[in-house]
Amino acid sequence: MQKFLFLLLTLVLLGPLGIDLYLPAIPAIASGLNSGESLIQSSISLFILVLGIGQLLAGPLADRYGRRPVAIAGILLYMLGVVMAATAVSAALFMASRVVQSLGVCCTSVVIFSSVRDRLEGDDAARAFGFLNGTLNIVPALAPLIGGLIAQYYGWRAPFWALCGYTLITLLLVVFLLAETRPANTKQVGSLPLRQYLRILRDSNFLIFALVNAGAMGMALTYVSLAPTVLMTNGGLTPLQFSLVFGANGFWIMLMSFIASKVIRKVGRPTCLATGAILMLLGGIALFAELAMLSDQTQLSTWAYMLPVASACAGLAFVIGPATSYALEPYSSEAGIAGALVGFVQMAGGAALGLIAMALPLPPKASLALVMLTAFVWAWTAKRRSKRIKGKIAALN
Image 1 (cartoon, rainbow, N blue to C red):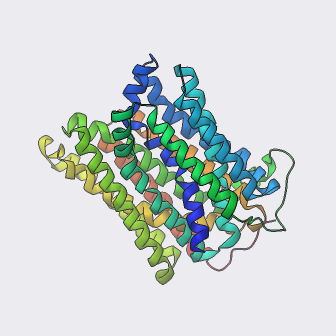
Image 2 (cartoon, rainbow, N blue to C red):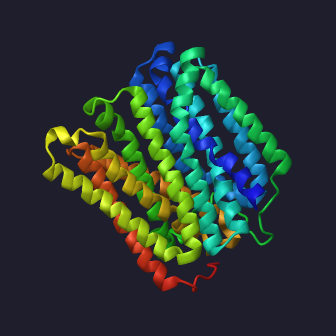
Image 3 (tube, rainbow, N blue to C red):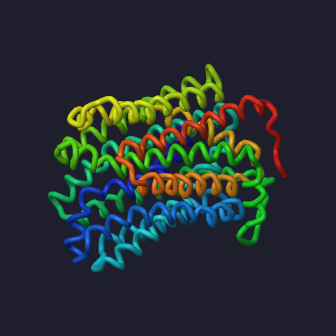
C-alpha cells in the first residue's frame, strides 16, 4: 500500500508544481515574452479553470479505458505543455502551454481520486486522501523558493526544464510500477455522461460533502491571492521573508494533515469534520476581531494575519480527507465520474467563492474571513449529515 500511495503522490505533485514553481519568475517571463505581467499572472487562473472543467471529460475516460492509460496520457500531455512553456516565444504560446499542462493534470487528478476509491474505503480512504493532501503542501512550501533560485541563475525557462525532468521520472514510475485498479463492474459510457453527472449532483449527500472541498479550496485560493498584498505591500516583508512565511504555513498544513490521518482512525470521520469546522470558524472570528479591536499598525504584523490563517489551514487539513471519502463512497462502480465531479466542484466552486469574496468592497482580511466562515458552515453541515448516514451508505446505481 505504501508503494501505491507513493506512486499517487508523484502524480499529485504535478498540479501544484505546475502552479508554484514559476511564480517568482513571472516578471521575468513577462519581460522575456514582451508581455504584460498581468497577462502572465492570469495563466494561474486559466490553469485552475481548465483543471476544474477538464476533469468532467477525464472522468469518463478513466472509467472507460482504465486508470493507468489515462494517467500515462495525462503525464504525456503535461510534459508537452511544460516543453511548450520552456520554448515559448510569445505570450500566446505560453498561455496555450498552460492549457495543455492543465489538461494533463485533469487526467492525473481523476486517476488519483478514482484509484484511492478503487482500493480503499471508509476511514482508510479518508486517511489516504488526507495523507496525499498533506504531503501536497510541501510544494507551496518549497517550490517558489526553488523555482526562484533556478530562474535567478539559469533564466526563467530553466524551472520548466527542471519540471520536465521530474515529469519524465514520474512517467517512468507509472509505466513500470502502477497497476490497473479499475473494478470489473465499472460502468462505462461512450460520451460525456451529463445524465450521470446531474444524477450524482442531485444526491444531496454528494453535494454537501463536495462543497466542503470547495470551501477549503476557496479559503486556500483567497489566502494565496491576498497574502502578497497583506504581507509584502502592506506588511513590508521582503520577497525572501514572504517565501519563508509562506513556506512555513505549507509545512504546518502538512503536519496537520499527518496528525489528522492518525486521528481519523481513533475518532472517526464525523469528529474530524467537526474539528476542522471549528478551526476554520476560529480563524474567521479572529480576523474579524482583529479588524475591530487592533490598531492599524498592529494589524500590519505578520502574526496578525498568519495565526488566524494557521488555524483555518489546520481545519482544512482535517476536513479534506473525510469529505472526499464520504462523497465518493457510494460510487464504487463509477468512481472515475464521481471523482471528476468532486474535482470540478472543488476547483470551480472554490475559485468562484474566492473571486466573489475578493470582489467585495472589503479589506483583504474581511474577505478572507468571510470565506473561512462559509467553509465552516459547509463543513459543519457535512458533519451533521455524516452523523445521520454513518454506516448507511449504499451504492447508488
